[in-house]
Image 1 (cartoon, one colour):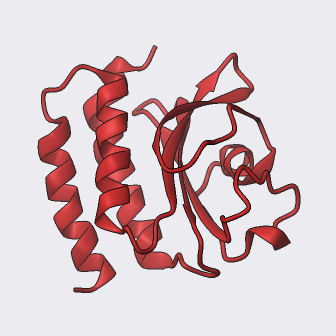
Image 2: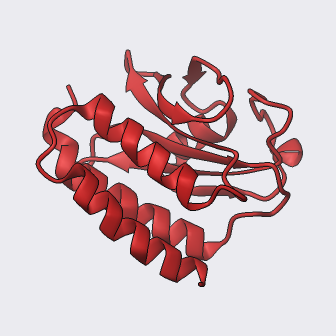
Length: 159
Protein backbone atom coordinates (compact mmCIF):
# COMPACT_ATOMS: atom_id res chain seq x y z
CA UNK A 1 0.00 0.00 0.00
CA UNK A 2 1.34 3.44 -0.92
CA UNK A 3 1.63 6.26 1.60
CA UNK A 4 -1.23 8.08 -0.12
CA UNK A 5 -3.44 5.02 0.24
CA UNK A 6 -2.45 4.67 3.90
CA UNK A 7 -3.38 8.29 4.55
CA UNK A 8 -6.70 7.92 2.72
CA UNK A 9 -7.58 4.98 4.99
CA UNK A 10 -6.35 6.80 8.07
CA UNK A 11 -8.42 9.90 7.31
CA UNK A 12 -11.57 7.78 7.27
CA UNK A 13 -10.59 6.17 10.58
CA UNK A 14 -9.83 9.53 12.21
CA UNK A 15 -13.08 11.04 10.93
CA UNK A 16 -14.96 8.25 12.69
CA UNK A 17 -12.91 8.67 15.87
CA UNK A 18 -13.56 12.38 16.27
CA UNK A 19 -17.07 12.81 14.88
CA UNK A 20 -19.42 14.26 17.53
CA UNK A 21 -16.76 14.05 20.26
CA UNK A 22 -16.41 17.05 22.59
CA UNK A 23 -13.33 16.17 24.66
CA UNK A 24 -10.43 17.99 23.00
CA UNK A 25 -7.73 16.21 25.00
CA UNK A 26 -9.28 12.84 24.18
CA UNK A 27 -9.56 13.71 20.50
CA UNK A 28 -5.92 14.81 20.28
CA UNK A 29 -4.81 11.71 22.21
CA UNK A 30 -6.69 9.39 19.86
CA UNK A 31 -5.47 11.17 16.73
CA UNK A 32 -1.85 10.92 17.92
CA UNK A 33 -2.39 7.23 18.74
CA UNK A 34 -3.99 6.54 15.34
CA UNK A 35 -1.09 8.22 13.53
CA UNK A 36 1.52 6.44 15.66
CA UNK A 37 -0.15 3.06 15.11
CA UNK A 38 -0.63 3.61 11.36
CA UNK A 39 3.10 4.05 10.75
CA UNK A 40 4.85 2.20 13.61
CA UNK A 41 7.98 1.53 11.59
CA UNK A 42 8.29 5.23 10.67
CA UNK A 43 6.74 7.42 13.36
CA UNK A 44 8.89 7.36 16.49
CA UNK A 45 7.07 10.26 18.19
CA UNK A 46 3.69 11.80 17.34
CA UNK A 47 2.10 14.59 19.31
CA UNK A 48 0.59 18.00 19.63
CA UNK A 49 1.96 21.23 21.02
CA UNK A 50 -0.75 23.78 21.77
CA UNK A 51 -0.44 27.56 21.85
CA UNK A 52 -0.31 29.04 25.33
CA UNK A 53 0.26 32.60 26.60
CA UNK A 54 0.57 34.08 23.13
CA UNK A 55 4.13 33.10 22.32
CA UNK A 56 4.64 29.58 23.66
CA UNK A 57 3.77 26.06 22.64
CA UNK A 58 2.91 23.71 25.50
CA UNK A 59 3.10 19.92 25.26
CA UNK A 60 -0.25 18.27 24.56
CA UNK A 61 -1.32 14.68 23.98
CA UNK A 62 1.33 12.49 22.33
CA UNK A 63 2.58 8.96 21.68
CA UNK A 64 6.25 8.14 22.18
CA UNK A 65 9.06 8.86 24.58
CA UNK A 66 9.16 11.80 27.00
CA UNK A 67 9.11 15.22 25.38
CA UNK A 68 9.95 18.87 25.92
CA UNK A 69 7.24 20.76 27.82
CA UNK A 70 7.56 24.20 26.27
CA UNK A 71 8.73 25.52 22.90
CA UNK A 72 8.98 29.30 22.28
CA UNK A 73 7.70 31.00 19.11
CA UNK A 74 10.29 30.72 16.34
CA UNK A 75 12.43 28.13 18.16
CA UNK A 76 13.05 24.58 16.98
CA UNK A 77 11.09 23.02 14.13
CA UNK A 78 7.74 23.48 15.91
CA UNK A 79 8.29 27.14 16.70
CA UNK A 80 9.66 27.81 13.21
CA UNK A 81 6.62 26.15 11.53
CA UNK A 82 4.44 28.47 13.63
CA UNK A 83 6.53 31.51 12.74
CA UNK A 84 6.52 30.68 9.02
CA UNK A 85 2.86 29.55 9.06
CA UNK A 86 3.60 26.47 6.99
CA UNK A 87 4.39 22.77 7.22
CA UNK A 88 8.09 22.08 7.64
CA UNK A 89 9.82 18.88 6.59
CA UNK A 90 13.29 18.47 8.07
CA UNK A 91 15.26 15.61 6.46
CA UNK A 92 18.06 15.75 9.07
CA UNK A 93 17.31 17.45 12.38
CA UNK A 94 21.02 17.79 13.18
CA UNK A 95 21.32 20.19 10.24
CA UNK A 96 18.34 22.32 11.29
CA UNK A 97 19.54 25.55 12.95
CA UNK A 98 18.23 25.74 16.51
CA UNK A 99 16.74 22.25 16.56
CA UNK A 100 15.44 21.37 20.02
CA UNK A 101 16.55 17.81 20.77
CA UNK A 102 13.93 16.27 23.03
CA UNK A 103 15.28 12.82 22.07
CA UNK A 104 18.62 11.87 20.57
CA UNK A 105 16.79 9.16 18.59
CA UNK A 106 15.00 11.71 16.40
CA UNK A 107 16.63 12.03 12.98
CA UNK A 108 13.97 13.65 10.77
CA UNK A 109 10.80 15.59 11.51
CA UNK A 110 7.62 17.04 10.05
CA UNK A 111 5.56 19.75 11.75
CA UNK A 112 2.10 20.86 10.59
CA UNK A 113 0.65 24.10 12.02
CA UNK A 114 -3.01 24.09 13.12
CA UNK A 115 -5.31 27.01 12.29
CA UNK A 116 -9.05 27.38 12.78
CA UNK A 117 -11.45 28.82 10.19
CA UNK A 118 -10.57 32.39 11.15
CA UNK A 119 -6.85 31.57 10.72
CA UNK A 120 -6.22 31.72 14.46
CA UNK A 121 -3.17 29.62 15.32
CA UNK A 122 -3.94 26.80 17.78
CA UNK A 123 -0.85 24.60 17.81
CA UNK A 124 1.15 22.10 15.80
CA UNK A 125 1.23 18.43 15.00
CA UNK A 126 4.81 17.23 15.44
CA UNK A 127 6.08 13.89 14.13
CA UNK A 128 9.61 12.53 14.51
CA UNK A 129 11.28 9.58 12.83
CA UNK A 130 14.42 7.66 13.77
CA UNK A 131 15.29 7.58 10.05
CA UNK A 132 16.93 10.33 8.04
CA UNK A 133 14.84 11.90 5.26
CA UNK A 134 11.74 9.90 6.22
CA UNK A 135 9.07 12.46 5.26
CA UNK A 136 7.96 13.51 1.79
CA UNK A 137 5.18 15.39 -0.02
CA UNK A 138 2.76 12.46 0.47
CA UNK A 139 3.22 12.83 4.24
CA UNK A 140 2.80 16.60 4.01
CA UNK A 141 -0.40 16.31 1.99
CA UNK A 142 -1.87 13.51 4.12
CA UNK A 143 -1.06 15.16 7.44
CA UNK A 144 -2.35 18.55 6.29
CA UNK A 145 -5.64 16.88 5.30
CA UNK A 146 -5.83 15.25 8.74
CA UNK A 147 -5.23 18.61 10.44
CA UNK A 148 -7.90 20.27 8.25
CA UNK A 149 -10.37 17.57 9.31
CA UNK A 150 -9.32 17.84 12.94
CA UNK A 151 -9.67 21.62 13.01
CA UNK A 152 -13.04 21.54 11.25
CA UNK A 153 -14.35 19.16 13.92
CA UNK A 154 -12.74 20.73 16.98
CA UNK A 155 -12.27 24.47 16.47
CA UNK A 156 -15.10 25.26 18.91
CA UNK A 157 -13.32 23.21 21.58
CA UNK A 158 -10.21 25.39 21.65
CA UNK A 159 -10.32 28.16 24.22
